[in-house]
Amino acid sequence: MKLKNVRLISPLTIALGLALAACGGGSVDKDKNAPLASFSSGKGNQATTVNRYLWAASLETLDFLPIYSADPISGLIISEWYVNPESPAERFKTTVYILDSALRADALRVSVFRQERSLDGLWIDAAVNPATGREIENAILTRARQLRLNVIDD
Image (cartoon, rainbow, N blue to C red):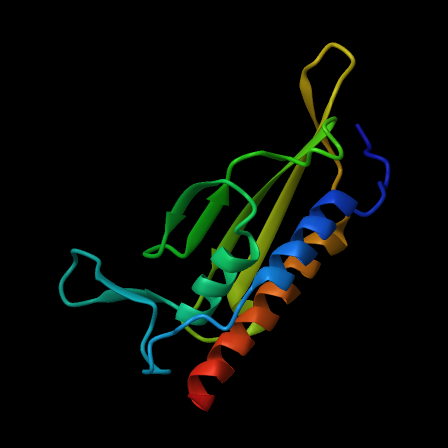
């Protein structure tokens, strides 16, 4: 089944804009080189870390979404389904993968899932504009850089 190209996800884009506008300077740990989290993997002395700025920026940027799971060991954030009250016939779910301890664009992957409510009330998978995930990644990266600059300036 070939999915039709759909419009940009305006409710999600609006919600992201509101979330970004609400982001403040917040206090951040002064050690700019320390990872957000460092955990023993249980296999010797090896530790698993995620970039603290990407982690914090991801949680801040998506703070309007209900979080299903947030695991700093694996660098994975999974949201619950979100229904924008202005568009109750569609819902979104987001998964954020932090893949590296460095603050780089290729250390972050965002997947967005969309469903539409059918006439019989069931949720059916729908296409998501590929640019939507990149826009969220860019918003997270921008916020992560702001957080890092705030620490350097302090």
